[in-house]
Structure formats: C-alpha cells, structure tokens
Image (cartoon, rainbow over all chains, first blue to last red; front, side, top):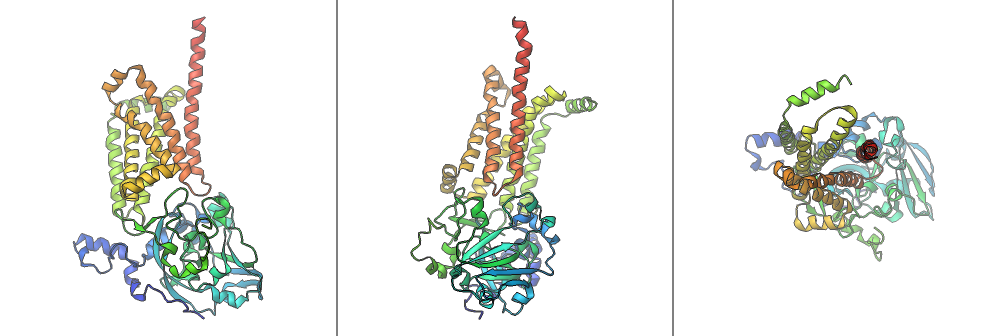
Length: 299
Length: 207
C-alpha cells in the first residue's frame, strides 16, 4: 500500500549517520582550520538538507514535559514507552485496545524527508521513518459516516511536569478531516534517521502532517477515534482566535501575535537569514483538499 | 538584622561602576555563547530571551532598592543608577537582537510594532526608558532638579509594560511571567504604603 507519494527530497539529501552524529564538532573543526569553504557537510543556507539529530532532538515543543524548548529532552526520557497500548474506537470495524506492535507491526515503513514548520515561525527538515496513516485506517476499517479522525496523547503526570502545571487542558487532543488523514502525505512516524523516535519527539508513535503547523502533528498517541463530527483540538480550545482546526501552513494568514510570512530554519546559527514560508509548507499537492474554502476563515 | 551591617559595609567598598563592567562582560559572554553553539540550536531566540529576561530582572532590582532600604535597612542606593542604566542597555541589546538578527528587515520591524500588541507594548516600555537613560548623568540631575525625580517615576509604568510584554508573548498558561508582574506590582505597592506612612508622620506637625 505504501509508496503512493514520491518524495521531492531524495536519499541524497540525507546526511550519512557518521556526519549527522557529529556535524557540530565537524563544523567547529573545519572553521578552526579555516577549511569551512570546502563545503562537504556544511550546507548552503535555505537548502533542503535535513537538520542534524541534535537539532531535531534537543529543540522541541512538547508541553506535557515543560514549555521550554530544552525541557522535553530533559524530562521525556523518564516516560516508559514499553508495553505501549493504543485504543482505536468510534466508527471502526475493529475497535479495541491494542499493543502497539499488534496494531502497526505489519505495516510497511519508509523514509519521508519532510519540511516541518512550527506555528512559532521556525522550521526544520526531518527524515522521518513511518507508515501512511491511510494504511492503519484501512487495517482498522473505517465505517460509513466517519468524517474525522481524532487523536489523543498519553497523560502520565508522574513524568510530565507540564501536565501537573496545567499549561494546557490535557490530554492533548488533535484531529484531521478524514480526507486529510487519508492523504498519502500524512504519516505516523516511529523513527528519525532510521533510529527509534526519541521520547521528546513523540515516541513511540506520532502523527506527521507536513503541510500543517507542527502542533497538529500530535505526539505519543494513545487513542485514535473515527468520528462523525469535527473533534475538539487542544490549541483551538486554548485560544480559538489564534489556532484554528485546519492550521494549514499559510504565509498569507498571520497568527494574531506574529507574522507567518517568513520562517527561520533551525541550524543556521546566530546570523541565520529568514526565508519565505511556502503555502501548504510547499506541499501544493494538498491544495485540492481545500477547493472552494476560504482559508482566511478556515485557518 | 544581623546581615544588614556586613551587606552595607560590603556595598560601601564596591564601586558602582563595577556593575557596568559586569553587565557588559555578561552581555558579551552570552553573545559569544550564542555564536559558538553554547545556547543550543536556536541561538537567536535564546539570545533575545537572555537579554530580555536579564533586563527585566535588573528593572526589578532597581525597583527593590528603595523598599530594601526602607524595610530592611539595606542601603544600595549608590548602585541604583548603574542598575537602571544597565537595565536600559540590556533592553537595547534585546531590541537590537530582535530587530537585526531576528526580524531582519525594516518593513517587518515596523509591521510588528504596529500589528503585534506584545511588540507594541515592549516598544512603548523602551520609549519610556529612553529619556531616563538620557538623563542619568549628574548634569541632568542638577538641571532638572525636582523634575528629575518626577521624570524617573516613568520606571514604574515601564516595568509594568515589560511584564505585560512577557506575559503576552507566552503560549498557553505559563506561571513565570505572571510571577514577575506580581513582584513588580508588589514593589510598586510598597511605595504607596511608604507614601502614606510618611504622610502620617508629617500630618501631626501640620496641626
């Protein structure tokens, strides 16, 4: 079933493991010897070279573990993801609470190198490993009448300081329209750079919807529900004026408190130049999902 | 108050200008960290926050000096100007990092000031501090006389605007910015009581 979508980033864009593991030291070394101009692993700014493992796994928003970007990498390792279970319910043929591997173990995974655009106007390029959500939905059997998919993140207060401080109304919940969920770009990620996905990035399984702001790509999922009506979503509940249900990346619709026209790619250092944000984060193939919709109204 | 005397005598021995050296050295050190990876993978945002947070802390320290003397007998008055001027320079550094490294274009800077309330509030706070920094020299103090004290009460609204600026940019419910606003309001309220207390002392002599 997989491979319905052809990546515009190729495997050549992936940095070999030996390099991404220590690119920072390598850059420091090259600079020190005055050899940075030789190129090699040092990419031109604005290119689609994936971010390093360090960048992807130390700069995270995962408010259950704290609001600082460095909090998740500090606090999330305490979460035990062994014996993870996922409940599938609602309008499905095969509802139930599954051991994660029973649910997804037989689905074909592949690498997807996606742009990732946070609503806070920073971005990365991330080489995910995962499977298409459509394959999982086909397996559980979507019934007639289901029009949306709702997702829920684990709540484990003992290891989640942000949950104890009630930064948001937890559990974190998100949702997609069924056609968005079925789109071949939409994946469930279980790895990064071929490694198991770290806890701070949403282990053991997270959603990745590359044309929407990052907060739609819900992490550490414990429930998937097929429903008839548009489900509530966490940031929309917290502030509906600032965060809509769709939250498609759109340079023409500003966040009330900041512009969305440009973004800063993480990893460019202290003199990093802003770059233009692309409509649908550059994934124009999803435009058809929103034909006839006023995207300033349905932001 | 066993601690008051040692603190006061130590304060007498430390020259106020050492604060400027300390502030400049700290700002330079944090910039160096940002430029060399010591502030994590997003140094621009980190630097902006470091400078802004330290400026807010210095504003609060500056507001605390009068109540400290009044209620605790700790006299740090000679540092007050250096604390205030250092706070201003850190606000300026915060503003420059935002404008030059973060937003990067005059169009976008102007658009943010006009359209983004938390930027508007921050900029208003900066504008309130500007005349204070310009009049933080002995000549201005002499020339302005009693008006100088009136003028420098602009620190109060500036500190409140700084705290609102911090609260407004947070996502979700975050406690730290609110704590800063409460502390600032507390320090300002202590002045109200101070004013009433001194009025009470003055009143009988009038009769």
